[in-house]
Amino acid sequence: MTDVTGAPADVLHTLFHSDQGGHEQVVLCQDRASGLKAVIAIHSTALGPALGGTRFYPYATEAEAVADALNLARGMSYKNAMAGLDHGGGKAVIIGHPERDKTEELLLAYGRMVASLGGRYVTACDVGTYVADMDVVARECRWTTGRSPENGGAGDSSVLTAFGVYQGMRASAQHLWGDPSLRGRKVGIAGVGKVGHHLVKHLRDEGAEVVITDVRVDAVQRILEQYPAGVTAVATTEDLIRVDGLDIYAPCALGGALNDDSVPVLTARVVCGAANNQLAHPGVEKDLADRGILYAPDYVVNAGGVIQVADELNGFDFDRCRAKAARIFDTTLAIFARAKEDGIPPAAAADRIAEQRMADARATRVAH
Image (cartoon, rainbow, N blue to C red; front, side):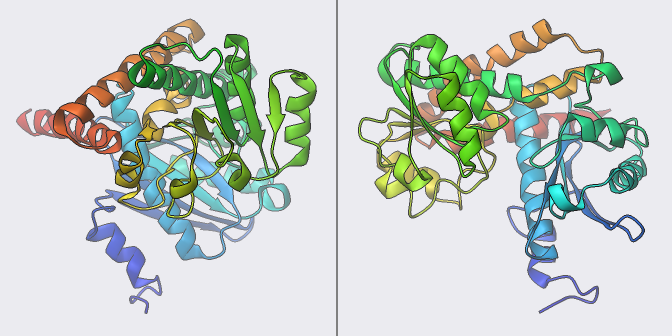
């Protein structure tokens, strides 16, 4: 079933009517000359201009791309609110294979599309896009962050993303075991790419035992060569979640890692990773709690990157950003405390705190 525009009716229902909706604006972008097909979703500007990355991905259908943009944008509203940023949430997706379809012409066309929003949306890197890509986009759009230092940016945001996840792990250990130290803990990381390989370093520096997996054999091999001791690998994520004695599971690839198949067999006591939208559907957070698994909400612990790119807009200072990202430790502990106080899972507690901040901002705006 489609609506009068030809868009799947369920997409428009999600936008206007469902609990996952509430978006302020969704822009469908096309540039025939370059082959650009993109979706820019702005969920909220209650706290300020929407901020979120650009994902370049070969979606099976346009409807799938729209749905992903909507979900990711909503997640950014909550992430930015919990990170204490004066930014709302937005996200963009470009439909295509980044290694085959990405061209300078396409990125420039995309930059013009973002610029047409007049600053309501600020873009940055995400899956399939990199610092060099943002440098190109910035030639057409001043509302671009995540650029290279040579072009006035902060560079790779995955450095602080990994640092924030590490702080979330320390907070989880403090809450569950009464000690933030990860020395001797066994941590499984699914995905050792942009963020995961930095996370391995933090864990090994503290003396944790690390088990890794990745769909790319070369990425796994690079880690094993870099850390000949203390790191082992398994073939698949399905193998990883069943590893005996696993203390912490860190999903660091695409979303949906926590689902009806993975949660019942997960051996870890804690889930704390960098991937966005780890909960495959509502209710998974309760399934985790029922099994006694502590879940550190993804959008809270992976906020180090967005803290960095937001800071870039005002003149980047790495030490200032690292100090802000270090507060993810305290924020995560506060969420666990709120969850216990309200008798709800941590994911729901984080949502309540974020929603209150956005509601307060809207009320202040109306009052003035």
